[in-house]
Length: 358
Image (cartoon, rainbow, N blue to C red; front, side, top):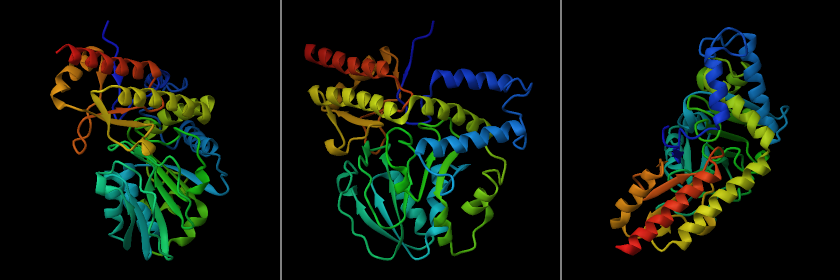
């Protein structure tokens, strides 16, 4: 029997075993249709029902009215949204809060379409905190932020209140906590963190913001086209959407409040060990620590071999930090169980004991 692995990868990331089992069955025979989910027509009634239910569940979980908001499953990842959002809505000026690599890339793409103002940034301290003061001028078309920073391990624990339309990249903490989604005029998320496998991108958009579109936009990058075509302007990523639907059903059954409670337990347990253990130190400022991506370092990198071997021995994978931060990163997405976090904590304690014996 192979060793049980504890998957802390930042994405594509862990999903519930139940989803693996159901998608595996659907690859062979989708709902007794005699067809695989990999070959079923995107124009079939079976897939139309899948897509409709997935889009409805998104709004249901986010507690948003379908008369005011529309949900889409598109392609191209969050990176395409970096340019699609400003292409549609940046007519004059836009404000960007840069808190890491992805928000910086989003800002760079937006500069192709209009004047971009960096209204706040934490790059002065290598993005280890969330800025609290914003330099906002009166004529901004929108403000863009990234709610959770996968690489640096910081998170907007409170979403700022702005008068301007608010656009958010929520790729790494979508549906991980109970927040008011109605504060956003548009939010998007690559599926491969908390929603499903790589291949589709969730976009939720407030319909009234479409009135702000002032330029001709190619159909594939036009939100209104995708809404009018019910998220099927082109062939949608059928398998990814089906897997997302299965996961959305589980999120609905579990409830966001319950999911948030479990995520808090996991994060608090790991941060407590980081703060207790004399051989480890956290990267992010305490008040801005992410509940999804925990970044930490060894106080002395000479001890890395001991900790790395301990992790490998216990089936821990995916904890190496991003090259821009170094150290370690444990991604605690919804599907990760507290048992895996406890194994990582025990590895840290074992490393402490081994170092003390040197």
